[in-house]
Image (cartoon, rainbow over all chains, first blue to last red):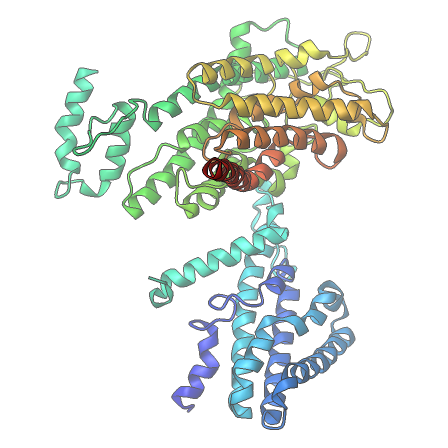
Length: 208
Length: 411
């Protein structure tokens, strides 16, 4: 259905070219919003939306933007989109928006965005750029959700707020939640473990 | 001994390349070199070699830990029978046996998990088995409260061995003290089982031994735990159980020094720790510079805090000498700070490293009400800075000598 190049643009960022696991970008937000699954999920959708549309807009403007001020133009586009997303979240999922607090605003500074705009949207057509934005957003979101899954399950004993550990009955045999999982350092260690597993599986990513 | 040697020689070919169990070569070698000093010699050049290899060094450290461990076992029993009010009626051996049974499972769990991971990772990487966990495995049960569940110790040990040691390259390559990472993991992951009033004295029975009801008015608070919750300006640290008329006897410097107070298993007795320190210093295994400067740093900081004592920080009213006898200070100074892998290596660096550990421990203990004890955090913090300290010591040394050489050249 899609040509090989298009497929690579869309699906590459999910694994072999993952922005978090391989390029190690966007780590700060991955640490900040992954204590629970729900905010991580919302964050993943927000970043995907902002990235996809910013890519399209910049791609359309790419031939008219003067080279010397391109970063400023990119920032203006991203900032406008982030504010729209922020307002939408405040209107429809107020609780999650409060939990995410400044981190929605900080999408502007997310390295993945600037990286994709500079590296891809400035040199490719709108459709390709849109797919690239969706792919990278999903690649970022996938890692976020995997980290949040482990942190919420082991740290709070819940999944999307559902008290799964309690239902299984682990507490009654002496199990306790791991408080360290809630703290940011553990997100870094979980991310490290995922990178470890990812590189052990994809041997071609390992440096010689 | 000869028989054992013969037996090992007999089964050895099975583990050589091509043998039946060639896969387990590293496991076999680990056991063989643990039991016998390897007799391989270098074949070329001149090598001066000490016959004490690192497995033998570790064994001496274990010996040095024994007084504190045995005392800790006795103290676990002592605190238990004191809490249930049967201390007079219980013999010395029963008291010790109770503590022994309470502590032994922790030692077993720590060794099984730690050595298990060590063996597996040595096997996977084709390394020979290193002996680093021999000491860590003994330290871990000694720095946890008696009522920390075994599965938590297992999880924390696994975490520490993998993330503090193996990923840095195994024994001798770790940045942080493995035993303290285990404790830090437990402390931050399961704070309710690592601090507070209910974990330092076991009040339930152990394998059916020592059942009984807690006497009225019992509090399981450690001296430092009491200190952290003091509100008035005058500090009073007391026994865990009241006497017949309901008064809590005040405990004194002698009690802290002897160690019949609640606390983590191996850390309470300064006396037993000092015996261990004497063994380490006599055999030349631990650095006297680090030990001395940790105590100096602690005393200096406690003296400073004591001079400017304020009611906001009740810990500042405790005398400097009491401070170094309380909590895990002495244990950290003797067994944790002197870890040759994670500590500073230059002589000047050792003084700075040790002094700062002592000072930071007291700072955390007195001025941070969130943490009753600071020894663990101080040692871990200084572990990070040890290479930096060494770097600047070496750098300034080079600069000084360069200056001297230049001066000598021109004159």
